[in-house]
Length: 114
Length: 117
Image (cartoon, each protein chain N blue to C red):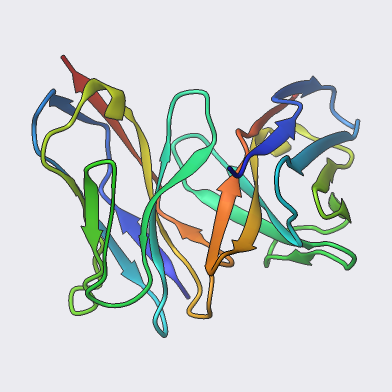
């Protein structure tokens, strides 16, 4: 079955540092890949997505590239801000059109200190 | 926008009672909603897929008689935890699927924390 392995946290960085949160997956077919973010006290929000190999999703300075050869979808940001402090979830969707039945990683808590 | 609400945000109940959690899509219609459960420091686990006008589809290992799901309208799905026990204590999160303008995205509610005493 599908599975997502995500870098364990918590991760603490200084403001303006470079961020990488690793995510690898196991799936049959050609799934869609997602990063969701959960800010304190709020629900999950879609941060970015990629639907096929070599696609790069990007949003709010974050980006991730769908790497089929390494089955990875690592999240990166060049310069983090305090407001980026949140829990980040990597997720995998079905290979059909759309993102039914998401499979989530365990989440990575990120804290950015001024 | 695409906003999903859940009510209540937090509930504490006695063992043996039933608890109903509502999930609403506030500004879009959703023929499909999903219910997830999240244990502390663990991932979200899909419990069931709720389809408007038909029976929910439960994931393997999820008791359908214990977790009753009703998708009453295109904007409302409810999850009822029947005869709740302490092991049912968890964080329950719903999402609603929005298909529009060539896009297909799940929007999540803020979650409901259930504590069974």
